[in-house]
Image (cartoon, rainbow, N blue to C red):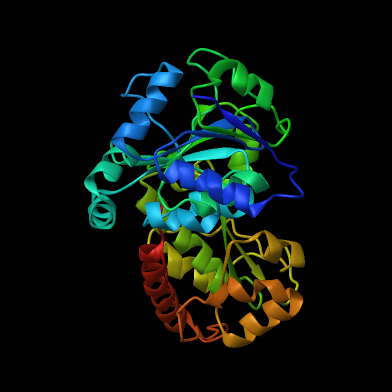
Length: 373
């Protein structure tokens, strides 16, 4: 068999050539293509095609191959429940040089059994997990979006050899063994993608690559922000209560939330900074085992709004003011109690503060239950 080579200019991609490459992949053939990291070999998920791939790479069938997708929204087909940190990585890093290994709960695996044929399920999911990559390369994206079947794409190299970063290196190892080579020139990074595992233990680096651990820790951090008027009563209580409930859900101490990749803060729209929580708020929270004596008020800023992933406001007016400061916050700013407001208890006595704390705690329990870790 002679390997056909098609030279493609990244800015002048011929859709007919991509459709032909996709047809070959769907027929169980092997097609090499460029990504932003290294060249890969596209292979349909199926017993015969994967056996062929194992054979030419000199790789055992027990090895794990990574699913490749053409656009990041496709991950929803393969991972029904995506945790908040993984979601941040998808939103901020994909498409890009990052492979994410997702751990799936048994309930989600059952859903996938209904969605995929047994053969595809067997090769896509190992030990209730799946590795997914969304390349940042126009040729790769078009090819993967055009194929009709799930596609894995290991690096184009013999086992134990360095990955190919240009077309000539692919041919040197696989000429006559693959059906087609899409030559898109040298790869941008010439380095493998970083591989991370996202699951119950948070972010775990499985393979060093383009992204560093620090970059991925920062990109995946989930930031919750609670907002009221002065940040001495309602939002101060909400911050303390949310920390406690989130730590319980994560199974960690409150002071380890940062290590787990979560940040919880609060701020006020009045612009006051450095004021302690009100005595009534401190007492109300203490009754629930939450200590907010060290709280100091913070003024809400545009930067704080921009950096936050979830913003919970106490009233509709708060939401309106937040969005007026930063219009882009409209999609992430919401009332803490859903459709209801949390009235300001300031100056109304301890009983009112206790009722306010109870209302906030109930709302937080509901919000916490909605969060996928």
